[in-house]
Length: 281
Length: 293
Image (cartoon, rainbow over all chains, first blue to last red; front, side, top):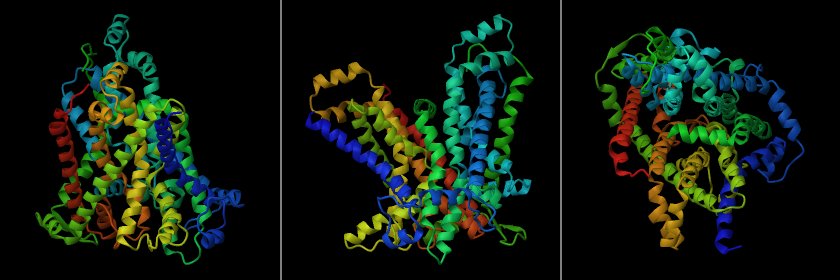
């Protein structure tokens, strides 16, 4: 092997380690009991409490009211991730279909009204958004958790780009065959968009699962906490707590919060990359 | 738009209505309210509000604290953007070059994409913790007393490291796709013309990557401004006083902790203007100067 090839691999290995080591340390931390960590600090070796800590993170009742377990939060995270991804795909697919395939008088207006939303993230208008949801009475509901997050047109933009690349002849052929707009959409366009839908589902699921600020504001009832939202509770307990923090249990919970989105990204790499690169550019 | 379209009166409107309702209620209404309440001073106990004109804005721009936060945001955004781009460009160039293990490297370098910022923040809290953190131990070994959440500079360092860490995968994926879309004949021609790898990169490859890089600069600035919220919130450990924070985090702190609705709304509006300016800058000024291959 040439020297330069060895240097290339060395740089890539260093990069891979930089990405991996923090999570590896989270895993070893999740395998020790709190007193051991407090005394010895984080270590690269594994301890004996991995199962115990994961068991506690998943099933022990915690939180202020003692009513929330890791499994409840896990379920809520799935509801948010799947609900958001499905909602986003349905809403944006039909909107993009209307924009691309129909002669509409107010098409330009609708287009800009929808696409302006890409520019401003929820964080910017967080206080009035909260007030609006509170006014409607949607705090501490799944609807209040999911629907406001849908108010951004990223999905519509992806599908618009994709529909524009679909050959015009298909519409003409469908019309000659006597197929109406609904039939064309369901029988031709949706099947054609399969991989695109899959890619966007993955990206949106990860995005929904990883939401933090909005769930933190909108859910004060612990039964509705997601895993990522639960992290805030941990930090709060850590900042206030006088006893030794349950480091192992915290890291076990952090790893549980990471696992589903990471697994999906690794499993569906090519779809994910395709969706990301084609859609954002 | 398409050349051949369906002509139907009610169906397209029916298809657009759900999205228009949602963005109307959850985007335009709150955005309008932010603009509206930025001109009012609201009683913290909810007993009415008073029109104060530009007073909230004047208060903002004359506040030493707000300016300090703005300066930190600028510094933080510049550094995170630069580091995240530089490191991932280096890794992408190397990953594009190696033949053996290319797929493995790609997997190893991209999976962190899916880690939520606050979860990364929590891992960061552990690594930089005063009692147990391994990085703290390393600093102690160098003779420096590292104190996360207490020392302004120390917390800032942790924020930057964690933020760069989770942003590398996205940049890496885009750079790698950009590199792999450079046609083979261009590469071969460059190889013959210019045997020095370093010069070849700066004179041929990098200019071809310019559209990708430009796009990523905008993405990274937006990321540093907004998506690092979870990293910052976890690393300041629920105690933002005396710790560094970004403009977005301050909107949250002033609005929900300080109950300063007017001031927080004015900050929201300032950020909206900033984002719009960034977008216009992206489309109008910079994009023209880049040649698309």
